Length: 266
Image 1 (cartoon, rainbow, N blue to C red):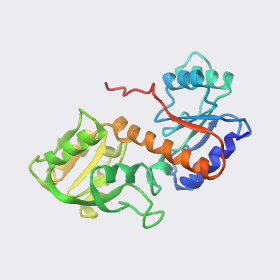
Image 2 (image 1 turned 180 degrees about the vertical axis):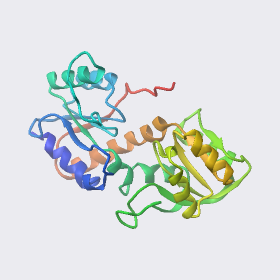
Image 3 (image 1 turned 30 degrees about the horizontal axis):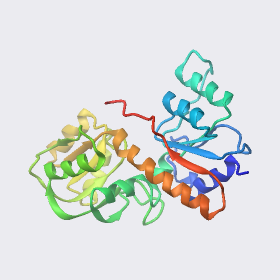
Image 4 (image 1 turned 90 degrees about the vertical axis):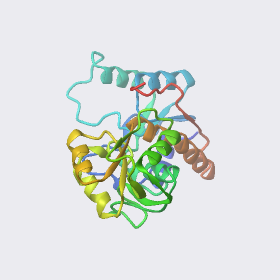
């Protein structure tokens, strides 16, 4: 019978935990590495709906992108949403493993996946602190130059995201773009990194007011997508990767994408 640690080994080989940023929390959040596992449920977040879904389908392991536990806990009680989820997970023998920035930065990870989805070619990390092909964000050329508005329509279509915004002049021509999935819009440093890499635009989420002003005053475009849509789409790719690797290693588990997870902005 496969164990939780067998699935973790596959995940760690694909997206090594040493690739994370210092602030991050990656790894086995809850559970016993020696527990049996036959079904794995993949999700972006460990929401109440995802926990209930895991119970319903008999999954013994949830693999999430966003860490269930991010900061130290001062209490663990059913009076909080997080405490209630953790207690429910433990009662039902469900382990949780989270792969966060390591899954963002690795080759074949989220940044690379969405960069290719948007049609970028000759792709490299914005900051290749791991290797020439692995690191923070991605930057690449568009096969065909587009206006900022046209590029935003590509992003909207590929992610099925109705809330894509253009910051800066919509008729600026974009030939090279940077991509940071999730919340790369929180710091002007990321805009500077993209500009340094020769990008005309940054495609990212959760753009703060001062970052938007900075980009616009530098005649630089930001295509703002939703955090959820930029990462949830990769869950289905992760299922394929884990299932194929499990087959290769004779780890007899079934891997599923959550069907109950929903965009909190919809």
